[in-house]
Length: 606
Image (cartoon, rainbow, N blue to C red; front, side, top):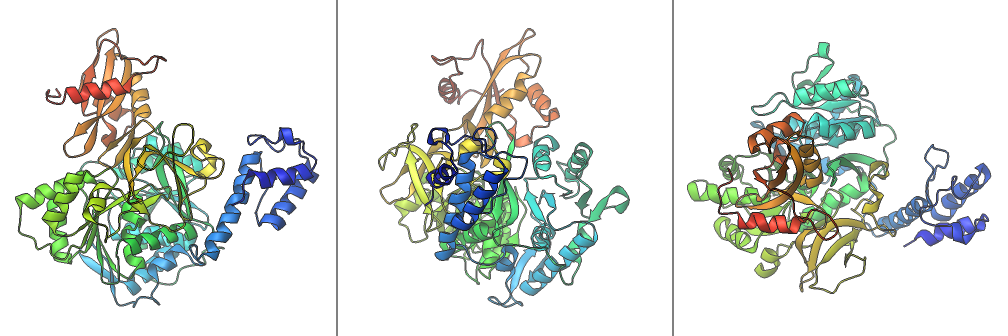
């Protein structure tokens, strides 16, 4: 695969001295390229490597960034040659009524079922109504989707229109969503109406006040006088979709969000080709067929339930997707029985709740269930075995990231592999490395960070955010510590970065600590994971008191909530210390704090 040497060769031919060609050297500021040089570089990259390179923007690219363009163009040609990337658009692959009969049931939710033809017509009609309401091809629309059919119709309609949905968990606040809105200049935001415990519409209105780019709010029953589009009317419309602009399979279909270690969300661009590839290969590895019924009880804003393989995987294989409520395991088991569900995805925390619900209520007939997928956090071997026994189905572990890293155990794996490992790549084109802190490969069985590149994995975040997350040769640094099992599957050991995995929801410790430190009665703060019987990990906050003594847990939680922190990021336990322990180089010794909270487990938290 092409690397930085190809770009250095071109620049050397332009007369640039070899000693100047560092990876971080900027073309204009450091190398002194003038307009003639830039034009020549543009021609050389286009004709020699098939790279679309625009040197006339305000951004002054580095040698490494140009090399990444060359590498990605070379990889794209290989992915297409191998058939991993196919000419087609995401919505067409998911809603294809030629490969799968239009009269087959496709989507169930809100008490009714749409067949494939009806779903396809709803998506086209919604796209037409959105265009009438001022949503244009190329627009970016922030979508906070609950598990409801109208929101799935909306997301697919935006893609069909040529607009780009930005999927975000509904639990995030206006403060946390603001950077994503600003990064893409979102023109609209789509939310559900007020719920029992949250008010997404208020969040949308807060965003609109702070971000002038937001022209409209899409909400069920929306009031045009308030600048709202009625999502119900959009989702109920039928008819032909308007022209979707110049949609290109290599173009961005949608964006997902990924939390940074500081709490700032990173935008993950997913192209039609790459995302469709992941949907297809993960659906095949999961055993989804036209006879499958997939139940989504995890939030569809997350890639696991959306397209890894998720709802889109079921639809792409000609099966049916059922959208169920989150947070109610007893209701989910009733849905399994009523809809004859064959596949469902859970986090370990939700899986344990299912076990409890099944023990308390043996009534529903769950004999249709074939595959329970578990991901989002590490599943322990004992729970995996218990799930298989209680539900009489295959347990498939799924380890992935919205960035396109996706590993699954296989349905024919022996129990030792299925219960103990987190699988191998879904994509046959994925390249993996397990490396130590110096970037050197480690032997199988030893712990190291997993690096991945491949046809489903992004090569950069939107806007070039966090370039250090990628190696110079295009591998994504996952931040996950793994061991390669003798079967070739990966075992996830932990995280390189300081992130607490609360039941599958990632809580960046740095973000929490920064907000807590703003409390006038806190001297210092450190957040660590503590064991939790259901969630796997929960948030424990260590503090030192200020002049008036440290605040209590309730006060800290109220303070953080008022600062705009999402509820799932709030600490469950508070421990006050005279001072925080430090390592030899003066950093907070979090290893000691984690050991301390494990020792305190038998002590009541309040």
